[in-house]
Image 1 (cartoon, one colour):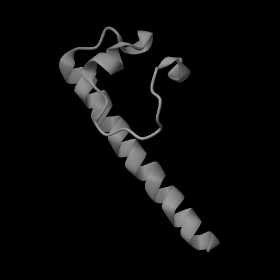
Image 2 (cartoon, one colour):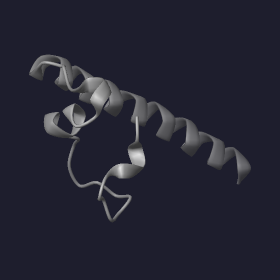
Image 3 (cartoon, one colour):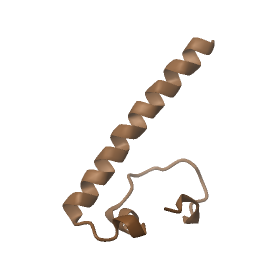
Image 4 (cartoon, one colour):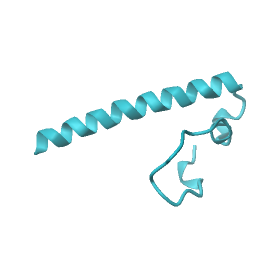
Length: 62
């Protein structure tokens, strides 16, 4: 999976990942719309978990 191949110029996204972006990865190209939406939901949940962990660890350092 090559996450560096996107032509994104900024690290900040203003919208959710799309079904087409999910399917652009070879590993996910076979997924249905429903399955792709589930991947998007899971990625969002994982992002929240990682962000909250990061935020808590930064607060402990202060």
